[in-house]
Length: 220
Image 1 (cartoon, rainbow, N blue to C red):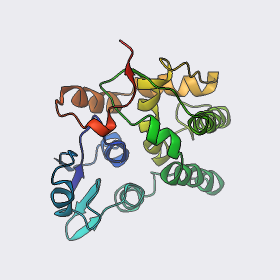
Image 2 (spheres, helix red, strand yellow):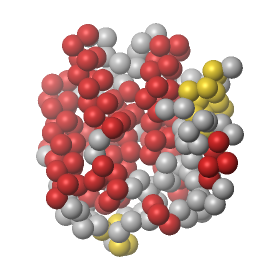
Image 3 (cartoon, rainbow, N blue to C red):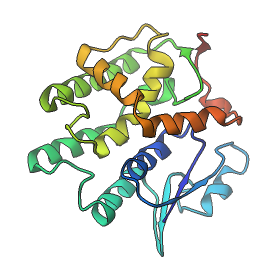
């Protein structure tokens, strides 16, 4: 099984399935492709019909969407453990995962994932609204489950909010954004996770710059 990903410093979409595969210690080969603009479509097109990452290649099967990859891995290799066992909680988990998968455009645009940086940004009203919604999701998850993950045990939901954890580490404090106590507890816990730290450590070793993902002013 191969997982094709982009630059670890920038590729928030790649982090999601990588986090799931790595957390559950599944055996996979990591294939990394540059996200620089020149030749991007052709470079990624050899792996995926959409010319985007991530892409999972498992034998003759190719899966090219981060949520579809996580769903497949959960069903094929984890006996469904990628989601909560309780049917109601599983439905709620899927809802907040889908919300992140398709929404939060302001947050994505103004605070692109950049693991190496500590930056200030002037957040728009839309981005502040997105941040407030993330805070609400995290705080509710922690209150309902007791933690340490959003639904108690680690799940696909946490994979999908991992890039937001990194975005907040990069921009939030320097930009004057504060989280509620429950959301901050989740943020702090996640940042200490060994799997996420391994991703960040590798990201900090990368040297390639993708200018369009270098947002904000350096806060250091």
